[in-house]
Image 1: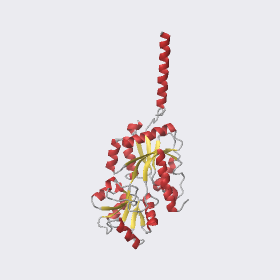
Image 2 (image 1 turned 90 degrees about the vertical axis):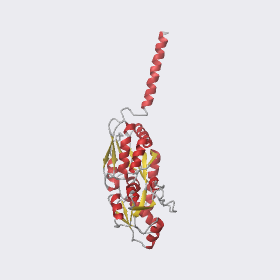
Image 3 (image 1 turned 120 degrees about the vertical axis):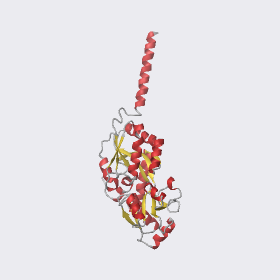
Image 4 (image 1 turned 60 degrees about the horizontal axis):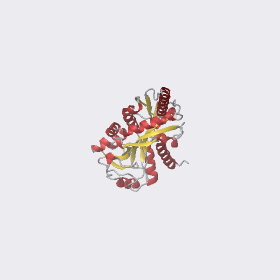
Length: 321
């Protein structure tokens, strides 16, 4: 009897140990073992930076480690992406990816990385919505009026962008190509500079992320004519999209997180789940709302598909196969 009880106890312990080992597979042993470094390939204050910092404020709850945001700006994000390709693939260094360094720059100039296949896409955090704004006393009250004037006056309207090869610059080129107009792009280092130039009448409008203009639209200094993204901005519900106006034009400005190619699957699975939990967290949503961000989660596989699809749009614009 005692022997049978002993054997049964041993079996139970073995089963518990087996189940415990199975559970450990979901969260890699000792991972993460230190703080996560999240590289932001742009300057502080922009949409990517704000997204990274909102994530860093909530993610430790699900990662079990703090998140340190490190800004490494340069060449529309491609400098950081080129360097990140060679980061140690242990899951402790991640990058904000998905926007211009992944969907625009590689198709306009030579880079040392493949925007889709040199990284592991872990998840999208948000899709920044972009708008075309004009100063408060601009004669263009609607996008239809703006477009009619642009068609009648080729090369006369000067529109600010976030610099050469940025998503804003590409959208301007797409508008010229698809709408038969000739807007002149004026590049700025930051959206805020373009906004103030538009307010001062130095340029005729600015193409930029909606979040950078919300306070200026709210106080009446700028007027949003159209949203160049796929969906309306919840903060600018009255501003239509180009698609709604009948033009097949849109660009996603997806911002998410990537890991170096070769990062162990156990680590990437854990990170992807942590990202999903973070975006769903009420605290993250509240912080994102304060910053003018709209959480828009996609899992890693779908995030990669969207990024590749945006790249195809760029290829069409620049005539690459």
